[in-house]
Length: 306
Ligand code: BDR
Ligand code: CA
Image (cartoon, protein in one colour):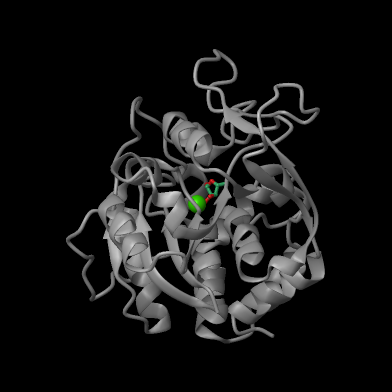
């Protein structure tokens, strides 16, 4: 099994991804960023998740703000507390003292070539870690990023996806210095929305993880329905499915991806050189489709509903 470093901003769909990781793999550490909600909430939520599954995974608090410009959170989707304001009790455990970016650098050095890094939030901590240790990519076995909108249909602005739009400079640092990473974008997650009725059946299974996820995702599901989404969207869970079961990918393309920093309408957009016009070597393997039934089955398992 892979050993995972998960950089995350929990966040409703982050929680599902982390539950999947606990079910199928080993989590070495959770490094936390601000994003969906402020850092105090994302750290508190990560601790709640570790307690739910009875794990003692260290939780490293990272950056409270983006690298350059302030950004808006996504509390209107994830709830003011990031967990759907479902009244989940605070954890008894405490976070670690070390900053997330320092922990990422240290852990990668301690276990060269052994760790898979999974980025489920804005890329602020990763960008800092890369500036602290430019050789970081050579020490990490695999980087999978949830982010971007590869044909330009964003979710936080017309053109930008949330994780990239929240901190475009950080995404630029990562995309321009990581030789090859895997990208699971927003548009793929819309294609792989989960059937609302099937999700209701999972949440009713009686397992504590299912009950928990049903509770924290209630507002997001209402939001998804309001927006006439094809189903429950679980972006970070899709990225985690690709991490845990690489064979689940049925369509992927290697291309060069960069981040727009200046556009008045396109700041934070991911620009993909689909037709290979720019002459730059691909830096990303863009996952376009997965085996949907296998994806749904992994979620059911993670929630103890299979
Ligand atoms: C991404 O943004 C966040 O709101 C979600 O947790 C996910 O990581 C989807 O655009
Ligand atoms: Ca996230």
